[in-house]
Length: 137
Ligand code: ATP
Ligand code: MG
Image (tube, rainbow, N blue to C red; front, side, top):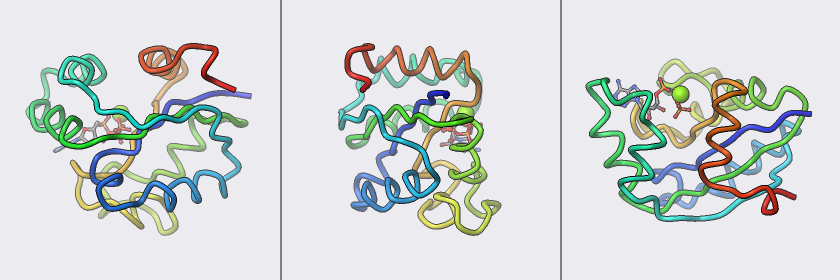
């Protein structure tokens, strides 16, 4: 049993897609074991995306992530990290497979509705940035 970290991004919360996305997450057999709606601060967004700080889209990405509330989640299940990446679909919704969250909901490569951890190490770090262990049940 594995845990991954998920964010329902501002474009999703602003279009009332929280429930629609959670339905796809749960249909895939992933359990939402922690969830809260927060307004990310600039400092939190910069820290969260620090690995991308040299990329040309870093500023745009950080601004987008603080532009409206997000829902942060911990998902649990067998191979949760890889499974959620599959459910999310490709970063660019134009390349996302049928039935994926991004195919169904994402607007563009920037406003792509969801984040999911890409490795076990990052999942641990990302979960710890937003949740304490006693909030994950
Ligand atoms: P995430 O990390 O959010 O789960 P990802 O792993 O599919 O998505 P990354 O390559 O890690 O994609 O990029 C992180 C995020 O940065 C993307 O989800 C997207 O919102 C944004 N991003 C990536 N490439 C671009 C781009 N070319 N222009 C604008 N934003 C981008
Ligand atoms: Mg990523």
